[in-house]
Length: 212
Image (tube, rainbow, N blue to C red; front, side, top):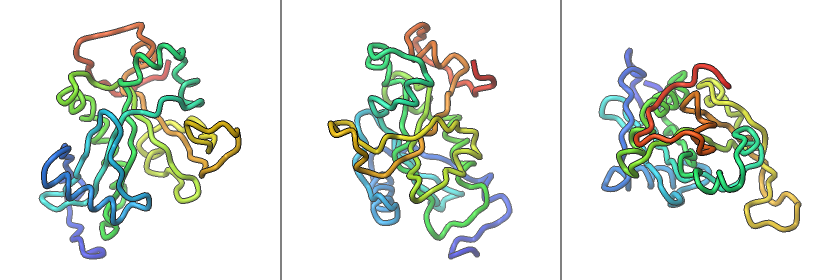
């Protein structure tokens, strides 16, 4: 046992991710995030998914994915899209707004393994719910609390930092914590897709093999 969870051989291989946007399992995930995540629970914005993560039948983690923030400077520069292109295509992005591994679960490499599983299935889950997939994932890591180790281990790309000002700020002064911005393209041609230069009816999920 490690803090109450039996870590047996094959624990990592038995991990599965379940889409639980509604129902009792969604309520369980909401309550766990509210109790154990340092930010608590807030209802995800716009299109969103809620994941419960299990090893076998035992819940071990929770995640929420929501619509991406409308303007992040380092991300927008990385993608290279215009304001119009961003407004038209930002729904092809998903934002990891909460990620909680339950505090009594201690398993090496678990967080990065969960992220790798998400990369494989999230576009299909988004397609099933909203009739379109996603091409790009992003998240923010509060630098006052975390180092972003699991995202780096899962090959997410550090793009830069937020300004710490919030979307409606007019003072040009930081009024909240600075967060590291990480991204993960799900396709080699993600820039073409997000900038509207390529379109298809049902986006296929492809692991990034080379950055253009």
